[in-house]
Image (tube, rainbow, N blue to C red; front, side, top):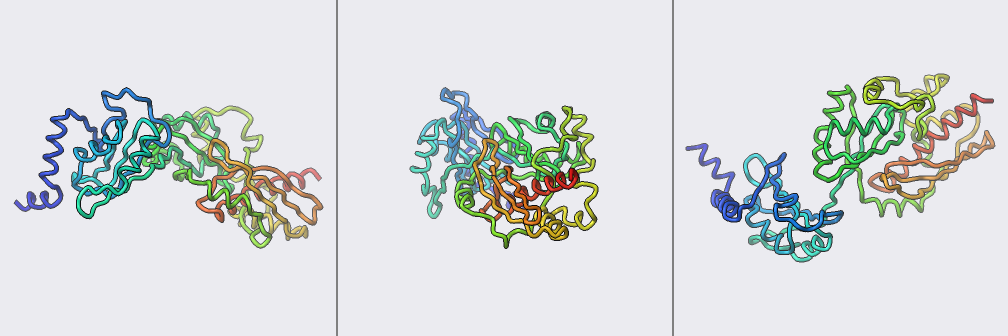
Length: 367
């Protein structure tokens, strides 16, 4: 008796029965997948286009005992739904939010205009806004010898919906990072849940997984106008933005990808002192200390952003003058934009210091 009372506290039985009746009378099919209940994707009678970008809306402030029998007809009143996903918990209640996808971006815009603030019940106002539909994950701490074609094969074995991968040198000596593009937000979300464990289990490799932010325009606009002041110099160095020749001489296969895990990842020259190794995690600081120890004076940085490539990386150009060498180092690098201008600026300085330090090494080895 007690169990039945507790169950009634969790679920509104009348609402559940109304949902079941609606499903039966309308012959609507719902599929339970990983904590969400999905309609369509597309529905059986769909005859419209496959949705492109900006066709999905994010719905929040949904009462916990409101289900698809209310929500699907409401959002279908704007236009045909390609897909509707209601997030569910184990109790049978919804989690307060859902996603509705239309065939066109115009219909999604109309849904926001018509249904944002819609009163489902007294005191409950729906929030409807554009879904970001993130489809890119950033994987960090991959081995330095990782090759793009090998990682693509590995990713397609570990996760579904992988479209392509892009590699870049990390701002540090640990290795490389990768941007992985998926066919949908759902595919990327499912991969994000399992990839850390899969890499650890399959390759004994501890990687980091995070979303790649697509909301960068304001950050870039602010940061593009900034020049790195001398007072902000001390920070981080490591490997160049491209892999060294001895790591790029022949194609790798997935088995070789496995063998790179656990191998040496430091690209610092063996002639570096132990004190330099202590600064291996701080490229700008290491460059500064080396210049000071050699009597070259403090390097002067000028760093500017250039443009963002299709893979989501921000291209930067730089000029670094080392007074005691009577030389300037110029070049380009790529970084992952940070969540704000300050973080983006710091990442740019790290990448620039990596390249300059590598070129200083090469200069010293040839004189």
